[in-house]
Amino acid sequence: MSSILKVQRKRNLSTSQHWDYYEGHRQQVMSLLEEVSAGKKGRLCILGAGNCNDIELPALVERFDEIHLVDWDADSLQEGIKKQGIARESVVLHTGIELTGIGHYIERWKKTPPSNRDIDQGISLLSEPLDVGIDTAFDVVLSSSLLTQLIELPIALLGSNHSRTEEVVLKIRAAHFRLMASLMAARGTGVLVTELISSNTCKELFQCPEDRLSELYYQLIEEQRYFQGTNPKTLIPALLEDPFMSSQIAETKLTAPWRWLLGPERSFLAYGFVFRKK
Ligand SMILES: C[S@@+](CC[C@H](N)C(=O)[O-])C[C@H]1O[C@@H](n2cnc3c(N)ncnc32)[C@H](O)[C@@H]1O
Image (cartoon, rainbow, N blue to C red; front, top):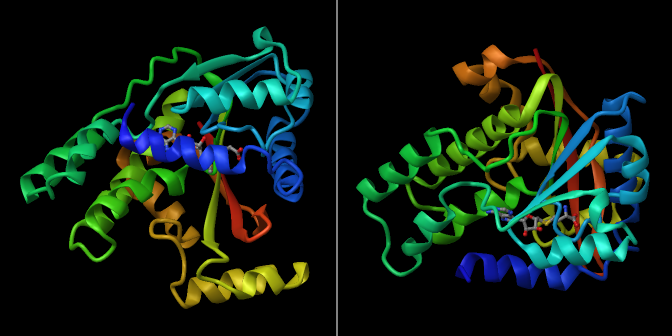
């Protein structure tokens, strides 16, 4: 098993029993899905579904004609659907899929720090379309608290101060948007749910009253305090600068932020980014 996957498996195990903590976060994700599906049935794909703590599968099975769940970690997906009492045949599982497409390539950077040529090679892999072997065109594609995990890879391997970390992070983010768009049907919707910051570095997040979360969010952006690659102000310009994406995308929208309680000692400031395909 890849050592990066082992880390993900361990993390998933550490939150697999946190269903109750996730309630508020789950409500936010579910209302976003409800809003974008607008009462229509159709096909839903969830990237990074993992433990499925952020979705109510029985309600989604009612709402959508077809649901595909995708994650690298097969065990968390299988346990996630079992926990919600969902029949195995009600959903389509895509397990063992590494969603950056370069996980296996950059894993070797753990042992040997990469040269500039190795980084160039990683970046050129990220520029190629990623085939995850799913041939369905979806009405809604949700990327479910996955982006920060993807961009954490080069940060962990290169270090946040390496001169090329930011470049690799932004390429991973761009490739993720392109993957989402490639899975979407014409006029389909992409929903990215991600985290701006965690209570590890933003102690005020735990105490902040609900009605001041937006204020905190704007203050953090102003102070440039956020996970690398997650500044919401850069998302729309980045999509418009990417010739492939800008030719595909019709509409974009950022949601208000909310607090996601991960467990007794950690929370995130999360937000959603919604984009529609032409
Ligand atoms: C923060 S968890 C969210 C899980 C789920 N959405 C939930 O809230 O219960 C991120 C998920 O992304 C998956 N993941 C992380 N890196 C991945 C990668 N490179 N390829 C595919 N899946 C990955 C993990 O296995 C994990 O299930």
